Length: 123
Image 1 (cartoon, rainbow, N blue to C red):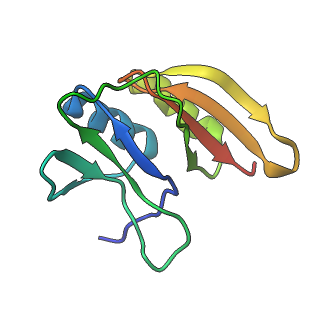
Image 2: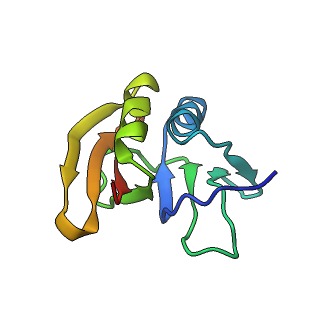
């Protein structure tokens, strides 16, 4: 299987892993991979030969999702496409596609676990 890099950074904490996996796999049309860790972690696809870092969904006792101050931005060809999938996958749009000048466009969304995420594209 050839992995498509979706630049992201860090971990997204979740309360319901099945629901969160379904959301992210639906929005980005990817398959998350179970990581061999003491807590339940599912990694986003990564390609070590390309720029970008990968992240993961994490379910850990005592760590709550939502209300976080870290915002992960996912790179997209056109963020309006993934924004439509956010709604279909049970998430919400916090801010519709907005120009950020020479840096392209962004959408802010809320996943099924209450985490705010960013979608970024140049078109």
